[in-house]
Length: 122
Length: 107
Image 1 (cartoon, helix red, strand yellow):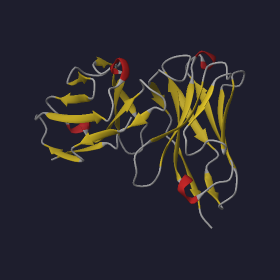
Image 2: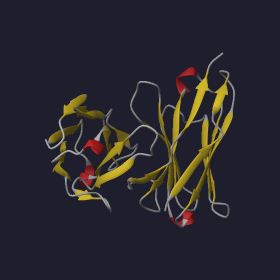
Image 3: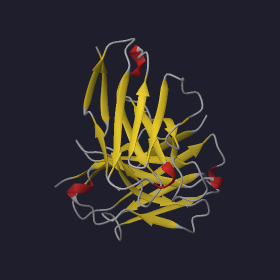
């Protein structure tokens, strides 16, 4: 059974930083692209970032470029999202999701985690 | 590629059918459109990908159709467990984009 478990969320002040983690199990992690997706309160889902199976090809949504960094550790089966210069509009539930392919661009998301909340407020 | 779902909310009695729409602002390349069901406290569940291919284990009461800019998820003979928010995802162009969701309530 595919399992994706996010951690690292919480409350942070504007301008602060946070690192989200996603522990993967139940599949060959190193063979799948991975993503972070978020849902701000009362709004729809937004794709945040994607990374291919090797970690050598990355992509970001326009609203997070330059502030967020996605990475992975295939030896430990972990996906990460480093978030810097946090803004109130980054407040959202953040989900880790597995891609159906090795590349992150043209695959659908076939498994998701439960998500973790991030609240940015002073 | 902006995805617009309608209706926003649907209230359906068990045994009835439901039709959910997902319209794209631009043609979805290769009909790379997926549908998901999300219930509170659970992970989103993949229902359909490639506009019409049911995911593993999804009952045939769920069917996807459409092409280009207009896509539909049809649920026949709704069961009490079929509630939740249903959303679409286009993955034919970058960035991937999502519809805002249709909430299905069971009467």
